[in-house]
Amino acid sequence: MSIGYKDDFVSALENIASDLEGINDAAAIAIHKALDEWTARVAIVASMKLGRPHWELSQAIANKVVDYLENHKIFAMTGFRFRSGRKWSIKHGTRNVYFPDPGYYGQYHEGGFRRGGVPYRHPARFLRDAKISSMPILDNLISKYLNEEIQKAIQQEVANIRSQRKARRRGGIRQDPENGFPR
Image 1 (tube, rainbow, N blue to C red):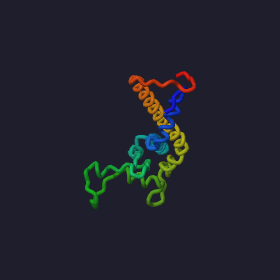
Image 2: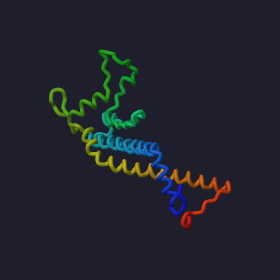
Image 3: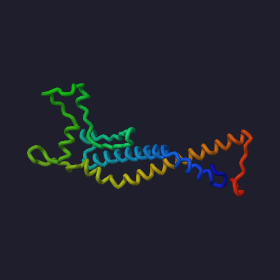
Image 4: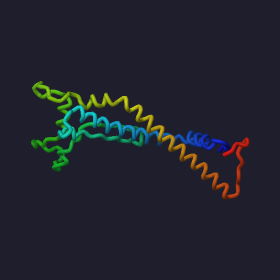
């Protein structure tokens, strides 16, 4: 650990760089937050492109971020929520029973055409277009959250260094700054 003017910051960077696990954790938290905000924006843009905010289809658009800890993968999903089977507690594999579900309904409406080739009144591929139009925002979100998380990690490491120095001073061990730099 170095001693002197602004050397706590340098020491904190050295400690964090030696501890790559801390950088990976900070990056994973930042990416998770950025993807969560991005998927929420995609869901909002998709329902705006649909043009009917109170329609059950626009209310069935949902978002989700999943972290896989084993291989450090983070997936973001925005799509239609399937819920009618759970709503009426229907067992999986039940046949000859039809319950309208916004999830299945949304998959057909995303294509843009009905069974006979007649187009729907709303724009086709509204969810896919919302994802594509929201893609440039993702880089800014990741850089914003990554900077915040890394700065938090650096501040925490500086606080640890200063608390260790205080503990040594209480124990009677004093260290003077190198080259006469003031604190």
